[in-house]
Length: 278
Image (cartoon, rainbow, N blue to C red; front, side):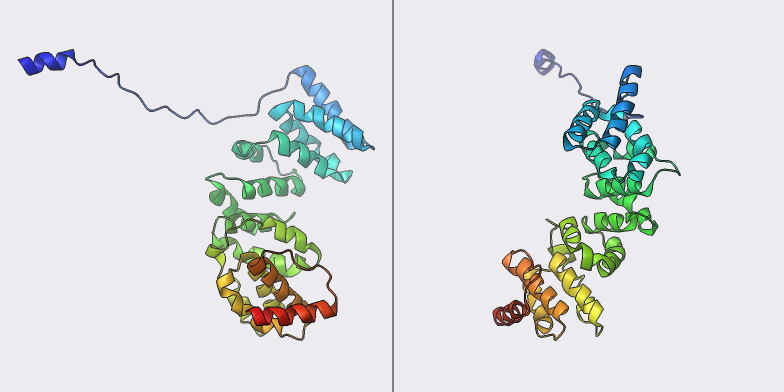
């Protein structure tokens, strides 16, 4: 009886139900009628702006509407592309479209939506921290236009998913000569260890272009512990292959920027120096 009495004196602890996550957003916030008209005028002003100050002012106004301006930016994008100014729309979207709302933005696209806009959104998915990114990106590996498959592959590789390797390798084969800086930037900060073995098969090829691909992949994904794989390339007669090997050594081992347009003397001296270090 005493135990029963003591237990009755203990205050009851109210049961705490786990907080339920908020329901997913169904649409972007809506602009008022006056805001809609004003936003459309500002989009025209952005497209027609000839001076930097005019562009900056139009962008500032559009960003000020918040997420509600996104559907209007999408609708105005085809004309912006015709004017060769899609980058202006991308800068507005960068400011008002959050990673949490990428799925909602993707749902706004139609069959007539331009590839540039699709490509922009896929890049945003690739760079996002969304947990459903792999599920979203994987089917896009078969897409064509605006580098969508490449962006999907890049996003998968950044998450350690090797399903993206083939399309990224193909992009490196065809785009490296003119777009090396962009490709390097696309994989900046990537953890090297999980993908370090990707260059091996290409490095062992007897085809020059495949070995060149392997060295460039090593620059992006390789690790210092495997740098001896580059020694044969540092002795190659082909200048492009030797330079690629030098740059891979500089980036992976020394943490230095790649050489852009070195002289032949610099290439010879650097190759000999790295062979001694390796």
